Length: 457
Image (tube, rainbow, N blue to C red; front, side):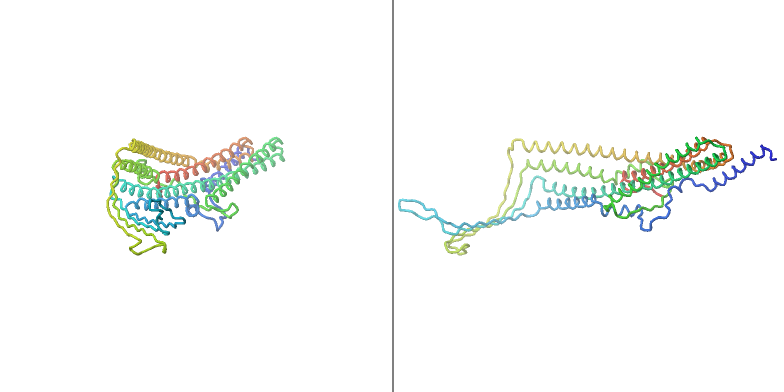
């Protein structure tokens, strides 16, 4: 007969050998993100972003807003060009009026009376209001395209985060499916031991409950994946029933190099559209003050006009010198307000207060953007640390589970040891996939906060 100690040594050596082989073959969790049997018609994250930038309704609205601002530039330039107005009138007398005199009644006017006038005006000076208005128009135009750029960055960030959520749901499906498979395998092991009289019916019942309790998490993960694709359809302006699937090759977030925090602040200062928009808003508010002040100084306008009048009983528009006349004139008009009841002074003060508000808002926006940048930077570093601490844990947990399973088969471990080993693997996988997801979300948020892609592979 084989000595008991030798038997235990053989069992331990077998478990150790199998555990070493498993450790050599086990992966560090990246396999959880692998996409198997990808749909050939599936789109990548980059393609999803391009579709959203082309079709999303918010982008279309932002483009229209930019075009409106372009037209406002033309509106301000209209004050520089001459203004030409033409007016005309025709009167047909039905019952002519008569004048009573000592000599009798006399008829006033003829049956047909026609008049016309044309006038061209050119604003020569308005206290700087015209040049201020032109500058405001340019600021509006720049703001329109910056708002479009900001909307595009926001859509890109939304699509990125949504796609990473879909990838997370896919990874969670793998995690929950593996957890369910392990629970079912353990149920078979316990049932086999029950048949051998080495486990109780209570152990079998407990494991059946564990299998049942594991299935809802898998169902929830699958539903989260489908909900993510449904939300992606909405962002891409697709019908909920349209076929859509996502494919990816997820790079290691640890391979991305990020500039230091001060460099990120400087990049955000130069590239973040929202910050530049608030700065332009402050400049426009300043020009509004100049426009309001211009009302104190009045205006100088050049004009030229031509007038025609005519009346006749026979024709509507008489041209003979006998019953028509022409006149032309040129000149300058100076309008200086002497007293307006403090209306202009009040308007100037309102615009000055609005300018002060715009400066405060610009400073507040700058501060908030720096907070956004630092928050995303901190979240990215924290996610990287979590990935580094959990990346190797999955292989170790799988090795531990395999060893515990072998020991359980040979009566060297209890069912509780088996449950603990399975739970350790499940927790390690959940923490790893969540850390990877959080890392890519933080990277996308950092790109948005800065206003451009900052990561270098």
